[in-house]
Image 1 (tube, rainbow, N blue to C red):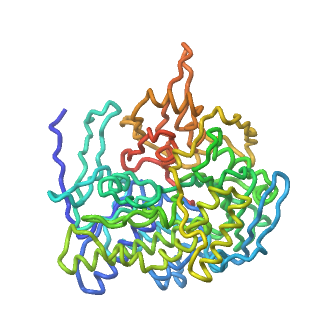
Image 2: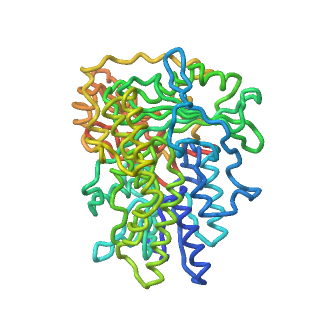
Amino acid sequence: MAETPERESMEFDLVIVGGGPAGLSAAIRFKQLANEAGEDLSVVVIEKGGEIGAHILSGVVMDPVGLDQLIPDWRTRDDRPLKSEVTDDKFIFLGPSGSADISWLPMPPFMKNHGNFTGSLANVTRWLGAEAEKLGVEVFPGFAASELVFDDKGAVKGIVAGVMGIGADGQPKDDYQPGMELLGKYVLFAEGARGSLTKQLIRKFNLDEGRDPQKYGIGLKEVWSVPEENFKEGYVQHTMGWPLDNKTGGGSFLYHFRDNGEPFITVGFVVHLNYANPYISPYDEFQRFKHHESVSHFLKGGKRVAYGARAITEGGFQSVPKLAFPGGALIGCGAGFVNVPRIKGSHNAILTGMMGAEAAFEAIREGRAGDTLDNYEEAYAGSSVYKELKTVRNVKPLWSKLGTALGIPMGGLDMWVNSLFGFSFFGTLSHGKTDAASLKPAKNFKPIEYPRPDGVLSFDKLTNVSFTNTYHEEDQPVHLKVADLALQKSSEYDVYAGPSARYCPAGVYEWVKEDGGAMRFQINSQNCIHCKTCDIKDPNLNINWTVPEGGGGPAYSNT
């Protein structure tokens, strides 16, 4: 083999890791400020997906407040990415064979969806990427950020991206590329829920000290092309209840939107990952949910055209870590700005991206670099994002502690009290343990017999994975790192009955019986759709999700 190439470096004023709503909004805002001030400042956005938007998945019923602030004229643009405004908003409680419309219940005004927009967050992100490039932002898709770079004082000064050509045996291949150091005066991390570098930063700088553990859900989503007679422009529907039991949190979303004039329906399902029963399969709950009459009548005669799944941060106010550290900051959903009762986070991702960019710009203009952006922390504490999360802070813990039937009404009452009077009778409730620690041994439960998919409304897992357009280079190390295989067998399988085969929405994990009867843990890493659930829900936190080669993973288009 030829001599191993040396790693080169590039320097920028600002480096942003992650080309989602937060990262691109930060880049746009930074360039807006620089251009307004007549400053020639450089910013680069690194995105592990093969193109901008390829790894973006959301049940987006978007509050436009973020876009309104970032690009004030977006609503009047012919190329705007969101065109379907919500005009009809339903909230339904489901039973096994019936439903009750509870939209009449008095809810705080911020829970209403009228005036929000439906569409595809992947397409919104592509639009933001184009806007960023118009302003002079350098956007590098297909480059996975795999390492942190520190200066001699321990501050973050950059990342390593674009390492490629390592074989499955861990050795460099003939086409090996060592990647490049991208160095900046500051680095903003916008990796989304459970980001791999974000995890390292939280540990290194103790960013979660004094905070509750982060909580998560898994969101699964399909996009359907439907006949015109099934389509209701501007209609949004949320449900809770069946098929989940009272102790398992979650719910659904369904909305109608047009893309290039064609009618589409997005249907999705969220399961909170603090469930106790290891036999629960979020994917199969989603598939049987679609057979309920409140959903199926919209989908009949239609065709599923896309599928995907992604972890969602749900800890909210109590779980937001310290945001700034020497050399950088966390922005967007990686820090956990999702409003759980609203099922919305993209607007807060945009707003915190803007705040992070403004803090970095101010610091650079003052001649600073590599220090802590305390002005970002201050901006967050005085922001609408902070106020929004504080208002709903007790909904998730009340739901978790009391179950759906009692927890939701109590959470609704608490939101009203917070909205009207600015305080809560409960104070600030704690989330308690991690989602991994919430799982209980299989001996306490009976296996769940899920209905077989009919291939019309419901589908098997591997068939649906083909609709994610997922691809990984096969000759590379497995990016799902199991720390202790013996522990995986003695605990994850023997005690918890192998929940990895059920919580994974892409068929990555299997327990395979060998000829001699022994059970072997098989990882089909080529199926991975980068949802990060395994990194969250393994009962021993024995699986570490790391980035594969850049450009690998799903290639979402209209999600």
